[in-house]
Length: 81
Image (cartoon, rainbow, N blue to C red; front, side):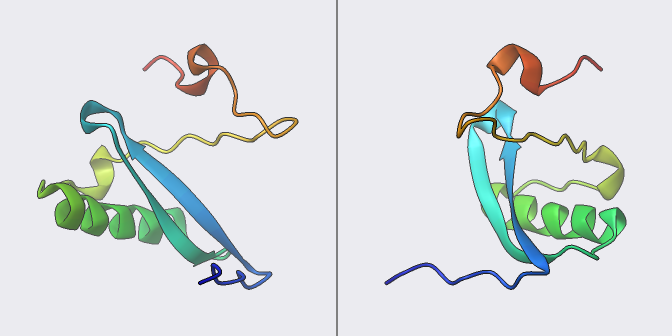
């Protein structure tokens, strides 16, 4: 079955929990979704997928863009805290 075509005002957001090598995707997220609501959705997914309790304050968001169909090198992906 072919993947659903996203609505033009939505995006798919891949997210990573590096400590457990967990990767998942929130599909068809409205581009108007506030960051606080996005963090709440991520907390719910971490709880469901990893059985861990996470609060929105613990979520750290980084943006990565593909350049020439390639993700940035690992050293450039996660800025120092």
